[in-house]
Length: 317
Image (cartoon, rainbow, N blue to C red):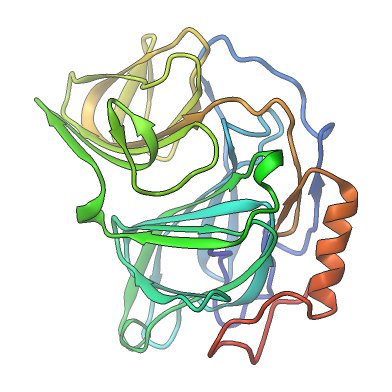
């Protein structure tokens, strides 16, 4: 998971700034939304890198398995500057990086070393423990460039939290696509509308990129799943209420249709509600405080695996 640092920015991974905060089972109000509600993002300026974080939110801990949601950018970097996230660990989750513009170089302790391009799926499952870094290639850093995209963490279910780490990268042309009238969809992860993504996930979920023309109506894929919309461009309407770009809207239980008031693009995500909400601290997701403390100690004591070719530095806890 790209944790948003530039060359001269202090390493803060899970929550921006210098604050380290632990969210647990009692940190959030237990709200049930019967109608659409905007979850307001917290904006951060990390040395010129603009980040808008929606999840975790005080009013909604998770949406399906999604426990972390960041909008990154758009950020303009001059030549010689850019994203440079040193090696750091994860447990208990999968990370999803999905870019709109720009390229990011991913490396991890499984030996993967590849560049993420717009529309591709970069899906890393930490399981019992993985280390990775996010940087940029020589060619990208050598020129002025723009980075824009979304970053999510997906909590693993309790019975899968200690699985072996894994990684998959799927090119955009290999993802399921659907076109009907003025609606185009790309299924990134999960199952929806009779399509299945090749990305292996561990609980019922969906993550869909949608482009639609004015007056188009899209019905959410699973009536009983928690569902949210992130508007990238254009305007949508839910129950006669309009929403615009950069708004993250949590749909009510009885709300199923999204109508395009103005043609544009949005991400639709969600999944089956977790009955047990895990702990989240720094880069770790766990179901017990003891496992969380173990992970923290393992990182401090150098027990996580290292990244081949990128093991000379790391982000301290």
